[in-house]
Length: 141
Image (cartoon, rainbow, N blue to C red; front, side, top):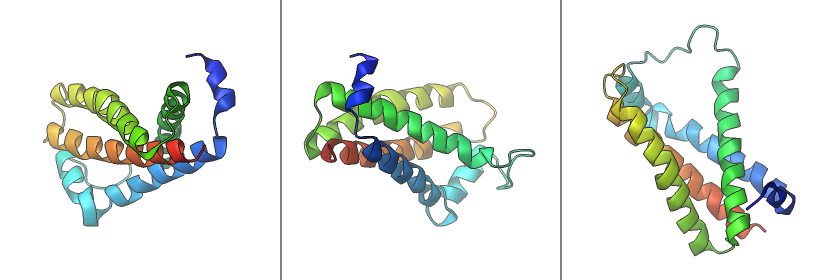
């Protein structure tokens, strides 16, 4: 694989998949789903960190774009273009990369009241978000 694959991407699909992935976070971390449990596990009172400003949304949006772009590059390089292949790609990227990194982070984060609960909620979000993104990328060639 090389960076030349960037020219083969459907950039509209990348942008739509990024927005879907990011938008899922708004639902996932809402109080009616996992928001309250995540806040307890983080030891967070729900107030934005001081000085966060727009960055509290800009950084997650940027990371969703980077993860979606990387997934799109892998999809293009591997010829992923069916629903089944999109699901496999999401499992590989979601569990193999996001889940693994989050698990290590959680194991060594003694600052959180329930670090592994945080990991489980966050890993579930990323797996689901990457699943949606992978399906969009695979089917929207």
